[in-house]
Length: 63
Image: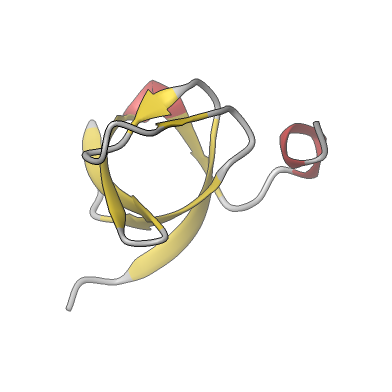
């Protein structure tokens, strides 16, 4: 299994389920590069580099 890390969404992103996750949502990220796979409670999101930051950002997460 690829290494996983936590990230924080910087923009609204729709999951495969159709749910749109707002900025500040914590995601589990797999992969590296311009696009990565991310998950929120089992829901898959395909993220571009500009839609998330690695790690947890308190200033975004507290909104």
